[in-house]
Image (cartoon, rainbow, N blue to C red; front, side, top):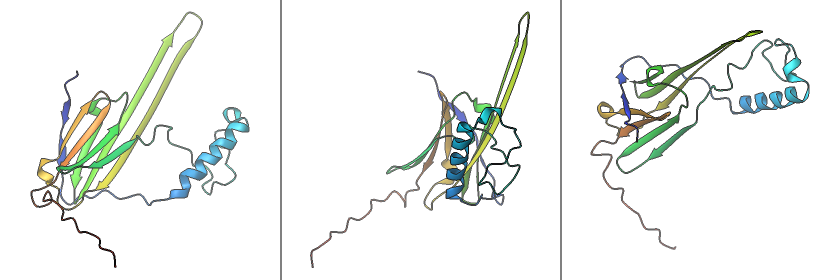
Length: 175
């Protein structure tokens, strides 16, 4: 089994990244636009063509790989954030903690070059992402660890002793 690679978690006080506003229907609209583009000869259309429902005329999707899959789980000992980053190296991943916010950034670059007798092919693709999570009270921020194994980043956020105390179960009685 591959040995996990530990990544440094930078603890920077006073540097909170700005949060992007949550727009739940924007991604739905983009997916519907993409669906109609596929039926309307999408690959042959001009790159500058404006989708019918798009309020920003020349805005284009950055990448199909814009947001990796993320799982957040709570255990008795702490929280665990798991991010799927296939094809990435740990040197292209950055984990920071500042002002109660954990930020995970990454950039993926892929270049392909092929030279044959009668043609030359050169392809480049780039994509980056940034996800930020508000860290709940009770997390021991000095013990946050990040490991990267086989394309999966795992960030462990251990609870402090007070937060690990067992929750009191309250019985519900019929009235």
